[in-house]
Amino acid sequence: MERMRTHIGIVGAGPSGLLLSHLLHLQGIESIVIENRSREYCENRIRAGVLEHGTAELLVECGVGERMKREGLVHEGIYLRYRRQDHHIHFPELTGGKSIMVYSQHELVRDLIAARLRDGGQIVFDVDAVALHGLESNSPRISFQKDGKPFEIACDFIAGCDGFHGISRPSIPAGVLRTYEESYPFGWLGILAQVAPSSTELVYSNHDRGFALLSMRSPEVSRLYLQCDPEEDLNEWPDDRIWSELRQRLSTEGGWKLKEGPITQKGVTGMRSFLVDPMQFGRLYLLGDAAHIVPPTGAKGLNLAVADVRVFSAALDAFYKKGSRDLLARYSKICLQRVWKVQRFSWWMTSMLHKSNQGEFFEQIHLAELDYVTSSRAAATALAENYVGLPFEPL
Ligand code: APR
Ligand code: PHB
Image (cartoon, rainbow, N blue to C red; front, side, top):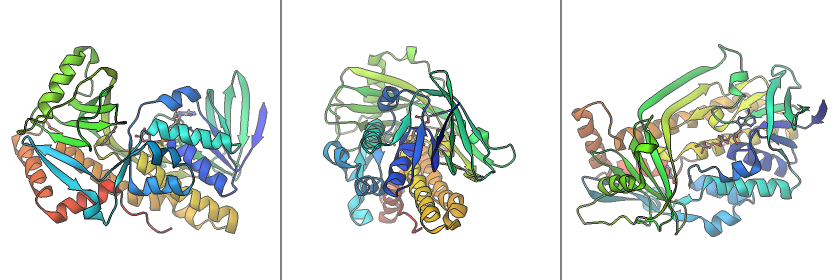
């Protein structure tokens, strides 16, 4: 058994684990990140790509925002498209100057891995048989295998940043966590296409054939989504059927034209709202998808993970610098205040924009909701304030 020692053992090299390790490094707090996939897999895993104003600011402040600033796309709003007409929600005007940044999550993961390795950080990829021990003691441990050899990390705290399917949350004894969960009767069929985006900003479309979203990754690459059945069979969706459905759901009275091109990646994802309370047990703290999942309609998953990291890294800084346990004790409560607000916004965007199986009355309610949001400054401001990111609570 090879033994390692550090301050914080971090399980998972996704955005939350890597950003946490980087912020701790800036605070002089050591950490070791272990990840059960390869570096190459983590750096190429296609996920979402919208960063809130505060997330982009934090990345620049902590020195990992250079490439994002160079290659990311600043958007000042989104289009809500329904009854085949466009309505623009202009963020800076409604939020005192804030905007969003379109920058792929896997590009951010690449930047964070590069920064950790540049600064001498330890990331152990391709591990397996990860298990957590002594969570209720003052010296928890993480055991794992690497190349068939047993390893153990002794640390002061464990950060469970291993996503929804990780081992951290299930390591908490039954009965400790209260789970809240809602699954939606639809999913998203998402594609990457090698074609210039057909819009300068994101288009969210409510259509009687179902929801559609036009997003992008760069001036050359489009990212588009279609509402589908959660168990949709991709074999039923040859490329021309996908483009035909997108054309219909994104069509406008003005004859707006969707640019089409080679589809380079496609996949189906289910949609759920999920969270656990508390987000902590003993010396184990859960961050990001390990503690909460939001439907992607509000583009909040990554940003919520970053918000958890911001609170936990501040709590550890206070612990190691001042011996204060106050923020650690309030970590879960502080994070869940934001998590519930973001759950509400993501559920609201999902309900308003998707075709549900609740019947005609609710379809009309969704359209009335869109009429209200696009005709009331107060309602548009509420959407904009949530979309660009609610202000961070002072800690
Ligand atoms: N041991 C080690 N690593 C693990 C284990 C395990 N048992 N299980 C999972 N992991 C790794 C995954 O391979 C992944 O790299 O943990 C990482 C978790 O990363 P994410 O799922 O990206 O979660 P998080 O960092 O919280 O980021 C949340 O990711 O899924 C998106 O929409 C979500 O944008 C949000 C963001
Ligand atoms: C994306 O670009 O992948 C994306 C954008 C907005 C969303 C969800 C996903 O709401």
